[in-house]
Every structure is written in C-alpha cells, then in structure tokens.
Length: 74
Image 1 (cartoon, rainbow, N blue to C red):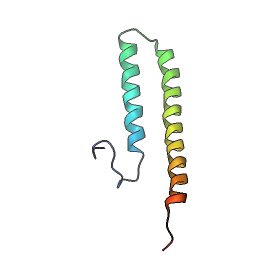
Image 2 (tube, rainbow, N blue to C red; image 1 turned 90 degrees about the horizontal axis):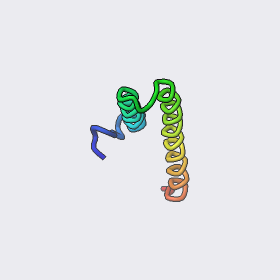
Image 3 (cartoon, helix red, strand yellow; image 1 turned 30 degrees about the vertical axis):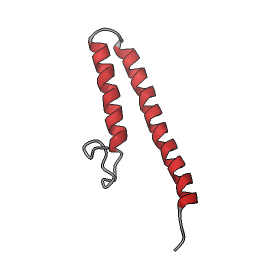
Image 4 (spheres, rainbow, N blue to C red; image 1 turned 90 degrees about the vertical axis):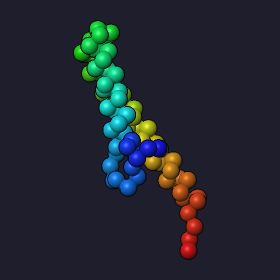
C-alpha cells in the first residue's frame, strides 16, 4: 500500500482512521442530498465504525496466530 494511506513505521491506526473517514464522508454526502436523515446517518456511522474496528481486531488476531507458527527460535 501507499505510504500516504498506511505507514507501518508510524505506530497509529491510520488505515482504520482512513476507512472511517471515507465512511463518514459518504454518509455526509447521503444526508446532504436527502437520501438519509441525520438520525439515520448517526446510527449508520456508529455501526460502521464498530465493524471497521472489529475487522482490525480480527486481522490482528489472525496475524498473531500465523506468527505463532511461522516464528523461528534462534
């Protein structure tokens, strides 16, 4: 991935922040054109953030399990 989106050397959750920002932007656009009400947008945003964070946690757990079996003692 591009360093502008995800930089492993920076200890942050910048990929999750980027995805959450894109979701928030989409919801804002949908509210501004009248497809969603602000109340619906608030609920959807909360659910979307929860899902994105859960995917991040699952990704970390799977990576940890893989590293358990790939690690080599030296």
